[in-house]
Length: 66
Image 1: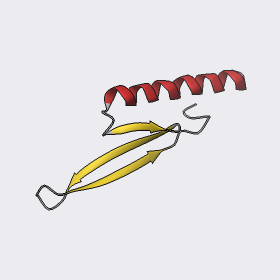
Image 2: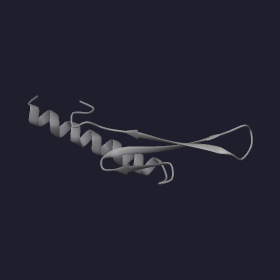
Image 3: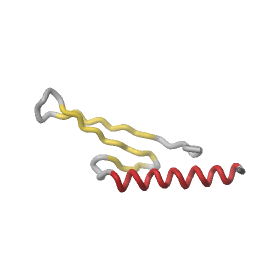
Image 4: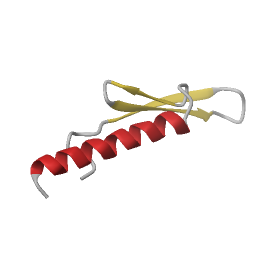
């Protein structure tokens, strides 16, 4: 497989992963920002209505996931 083919395959797979994220999660749970996946987690604190909001930024380099 040539480098060009590998780049194209990686791009297609990244695009498919982004499409899945957008269809599987609401915008409040996850979204795409400048090609990064932003995942929002809200975790309960002390068994009451308080929550801690955590934002994870997942980057996909050009060669990911090939």
